[in-house]
Image 1 (tube, rainbow, N blue to C red):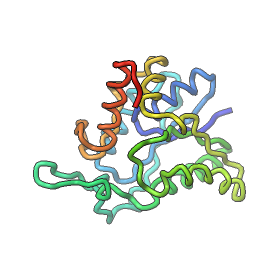
Image 2: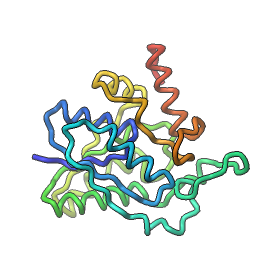
Image 3: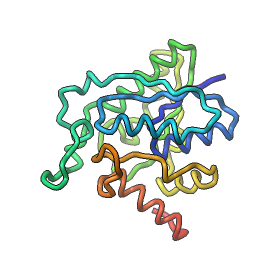
Image 4: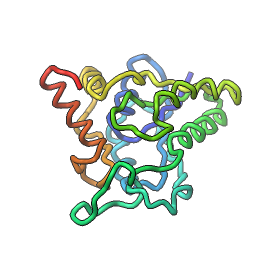
Length: 208
């Protein structure tokens, strides 16, 4: 049986790819181009970090949906001149959209399980990234189709993911998930800060 895996080239989804490989699960990597300014960096990164045994990644273009957005996930900021807040990176219904498209993509190909690397992030403020949203997601899907959503790392911290990535020999340094810069990690956005803190916690033998 093949499952669908939402992949971005970031640490969480890449670690999940290696976790699935260890479990002996065949997976089809699916990458969403939603118009993010770092889309080509993510796409290239994805090819370099996935396990060699992975199926060919599929790129799904939904960028037209957010074409008019001023979100800093879409429009790259000049941090020398422009202050950026968490709210500036908001994209309405992005996560809900991802899962809806993923379910449609999966069922069309007779795939009944969609895996994603969402974790218990300490900076996710969007309504469709909340614990309540994820807890109700499968219940919602039960009434509309056969596809089920699997998030094995849902209760994990980023430090937990780093620990698992090291165990699975993931190339942590090659993964990419910056929210503000399109080609080089900025080190200051929520994703970068959480990642840096988790790596430092792992090295120190502590937790975050």
